[in-house]
Amino acid sequence: MDDEYTKFVRRMNPPRVVIDNDSCEDATIIQVDSVNKHGILLDVVQVLADVNLVITKAYISSDGVWFMDVFNVIDRDGKKIRDQDIINYIQIRLESNASFVPSMDSVGVTPSEEHTLIELSGTDRTGLLSEVCAVLADLHCNVVNAEIWTHNARAAAVVHVTDDTTGCAIKDPNRLPSINELLCNVLRGNNESKAAKMTLATSGVTNRDRRLHQIMFADRDYERVGRAELRRVEDKGSRPQVTSFDCSQKYYTVITMKAKDRPKLLFDIICTLTDMQYVVFHGMVNTGMTEAYQEFYIRHVDGVPISSEAERERVVQCLEAAIERRASEGLELQLCTDDRVGLLSDITRIFRENSLSIKRAEISTKGGKALDTFYVTDVTGNPVDPKMIDSIRREIGQTILQVKCNSTPPPSKSPQGTKMGYLFGNLFKAQNFQDLKLIRSYS
Image (cartoon, rainbow, N blue to C red; front, side, top):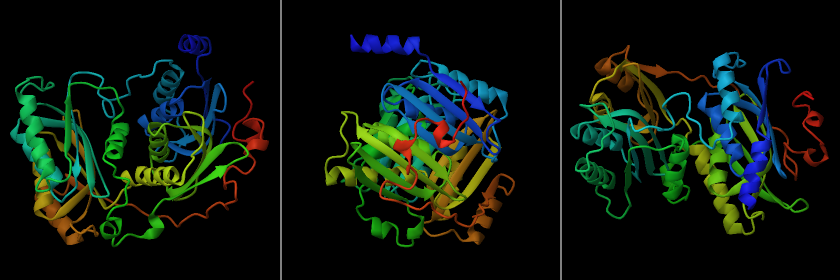
C-alpha cells in the first residue's frame, strides 16, 4: 500500500526543472524540485554527466519528502549551456518519472540488442588489454565501444562487441561459452590465486560508468594491500583527502572531500555512496581553479549514521577509490582514424611491444571512425620517454595518434575548514536556497 501511495504522490507531483542562463555570469543554473526517493540524486547527476557538463557548484537538500537541488554547470569549454537541444534533453530527462530514459548516444548504456555486452575484471598487468583485444579479434568479435579502468592492481572493462561479419550482437549459443572461457584464461594469466570474472549479455540498461564502479567495488579494489609498492613515485599531494566525522546534534555522518577537479567527479562520488546504500540529505560542492571541495551529510538507507570505526574506514577507502579510478594517470594519447576490424588489437599490440602500460582507455566508434583515448605510462608506472612516443606515432601515423597536452594551472586556495565542515558553515541556519544566494526566486 505504501508503494502505491508513493507512486501516486509522484504522479501528482512531477519533477520541476528550471534552467536559468541569466542569474549567473559564468554558469548555467539548473534547479530541480521533486518528490524524494532513494537514488534520485544519482539520476540527476547522471543526466548532467551524460551530456558532458561540468558542475562547478551545487547545493543538495533532500531531508524529508521533497528533493531540492541547484547546480551551476558549464560545458567542457567553460561556457554556459546555450545549445537548445541539450537544454531540451536535460528538461525531458529530469522531468520524466521513468526510472530510465535512453541517453543521447550509445555510450554509457546498451538499451538494445545491437551489441553483445562483455564485462571483465581481473588482476592488472602490462599488456592485458592487448591480449584481450587479440582474443576478441581471433574470435571474430569487433569492439564497437569500451571503457577500461585500472586501480590498485585490479582491472575492469565494459566492452560492446558485434559479430565482425553481421555487425550485430553475438547470439550463437555455441560461440558464447568459447568467448567466455578464452577471455577468462587471459584474465587469469599465470596467477591462479586471483579471481577473474567475465559476464556476457545481449542487452542492458545500467550506465556504463556505474557498472565499472560496481565491478571494481565487488573486486574490492579499495583495499590498500600493497599500495606503498604500487605507488612508489606517487605525489602524495595529488591524493584525494576524504574525512568522516559525526554531526551528533543532527544525527548525520559528515563526509568531506578535497581532490583534483575533473569531469564526472561528483557522479563518481554519488554513484559510490548510492551503491553502498547511503543517502545524501544535504550537500555542497565548490570548485576552485584545479581542486574540488565536497561535503555531504549522510545516513544509511535504514536511517542511521555510520556507527562504527570499521564502517567509517571502509566508506573513506571506497570514496578514495571512486575518485582515483577515473583519475587521468599517465600521458593522454588520442587516436582518430577509419575504423576496421582488428584495429584495436593492432594498436594495443604496438603499445605492448613498446613497453607502454595502459592505465585507462575509452574506445568509441562513430560514423565509421574510431575515436579512442588512452592514458599510458611505462611498465614501472613512470612517465613515458618522449622519444618512445615519437617512435610509436611514426609507426601508427602522426596524424592518427596525437599527444594530448594538459596545462596545469596554479593550485587554488582551499576554503578554511571548521569542526562542522568548511562548506556548510550556516546550513542549518539557512531557510531556503535564496538565503544561500545560489539562485533567485522563481515564485
